[in-house]
Image: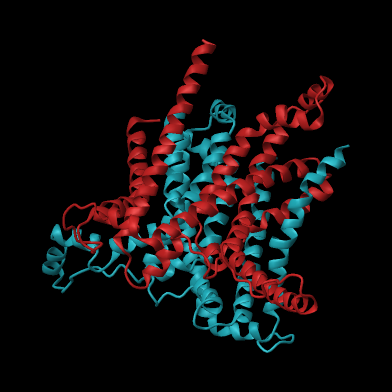
Length: 288
Length: 284
C-alpha cells in the first residue's frame, strides 16, 4: 500500500479512538473540578475523591456491583465450562436445539431479558406467598417468610443467566480443537476420567475459559438494563445510582468513582498485556 | 460412556428451562392476558397508537447500525492490517470503554452536547457563532444538539460501535492469508482482492456485528432518555414505562416486548438467509 494511504488510515483510526475516548476523558477531567458544574472548569481539587469515601450510597453500590459481577463470573465460568463439556459429549440432535436456547439471552434485547425475568420473579414470589401462608398455617414447627422481594439474589440469578452463554461459547471451540487422543492417552496411562479432565483437558481449554470469564465480567460490569429490572429496590448497582441521579444532577463523586475504576482496569490490562508480550518474546527467543 | 458425560449439561439445561425459557413463556402469557384476567388480544390492538414509536425506534436503530458499519468495518480492516503488537493494543482500546459503565459514558455526552456544553463553549471560544452570525445575519448563541434525534443516534453509535468492530475484526484476522496471495497472483488489484475475497469472507462477521448493534439500539431506553430528552420516546422507554414507570401495565408492556422480539427475530432470520446465500455463492 502507498505511504499516503497508510497515513490517512492512521488518521481515521485516531479519529475513531478520539470519538471513543473523548467522553471518558471529559469524565475524568471533571472529577478534579473544584465546583459542581460539569462544563465549567473552576480549578483543581481532590475533594470529590475524599467525599466519595464517606458516601454510603455510592460505596454500597460499588460493592454491590463488584460483588455481583465477581460472583456471577465465578459461578457462570464454572457452570458454563461444565455445561460445555456436557454439550460437547452430546449427540448433535440434542446439542443443536440446546445451543439455540443458549444463544437466546445473547441475541434477545436486554430489555426483553430483564422484563421477562422480572415477570418470572414476581410470579414466583406470588406463588411462594400462597405456599408459605398455607405451610405456616398448617404447622407450627418453623415459619417461612411469606413476602419475598427482588434484591441481590434475583440480581445474581439474572447476571449468571446472561453470563453463562458467553462462557459456553468460548469453551466449546477449545474442546473441539483439542486432540481427543490426549484423553485416551491419559486414561491408558492410568488416569481416571476425572483425573484426565483436571490434568489434561482443563489446561488445554484454559484459554477459552479465561476469555469467557473476562467477557462475562465485562458484560456484568457494563450491564444496566437487566440489573434495573431484576434488582428491585433491594439492591442497586453503580449504574442504577447514576440513572437515579440523572433525573436531578449527577454528583462529581460519580466522576471520581468511575475514574478510579477506569484507571484500575487500565493498569491491570497494561500489566497483563506487557507480561504476555514478554512471555511471547521469551518463547520466540528460545525457538531461535 | 459418551452419553454419560453429557450429563454434565443437565444442571445448565435445568437452569435454562427455568431462567431462559420460562420467562419468555411468561411474556407470551402476559401479552395475551387482559388487565383483569382472561384471554385477550386487546393489548395488541392498543399498540396501534404507538406506531409512531415503533417506526421511530426502527428508523433510528437502522441509521445507527448503518453508521456503525460504515465506521466499524474500515476500522476493523485497518486494525487487522497492523503488526501483531499494535493489533493487540488496538483491540484492547476498543474493548476498554466498556469497562466504564455505558450510562456514565452516555452521561458524559450530555455535558459535551448541552446548549451550554463543552462543544458549544468551544465553538463560541473560537468565534464560530460570531462568524456565522455576521455572515448569515442570524442570531445563533449555540447549536441545539442535545434532545434531538441526532444526539440519540450519536449515543447509539458511540455505545455499540465496539460490538461492530469486534466480530468483523475477528473474522478478518482469522482469514487465510494465502487466499489473498492467490487472488493477487491471479491478477486481482488490491480493490479486487477486497471486493472479491475479503468482503464476502467477512460477511458472517458483518452479520453478527449488525445484529449486535441493531438489537440493543432498537430496544434502548437509557440513551434516549439521557440524550433525547422527553421528545424522542423509543420502544425501550415505552416498555420501561409499562413495567417500572408511571403507566404501569405489564400486560401491554409484555405485548410490546413480544412484538419487538418477533420483528427482530424475523429480521435476523431474513438477514441470515441472505448471508448464507452469499457464502454459498463464494464457495461455488
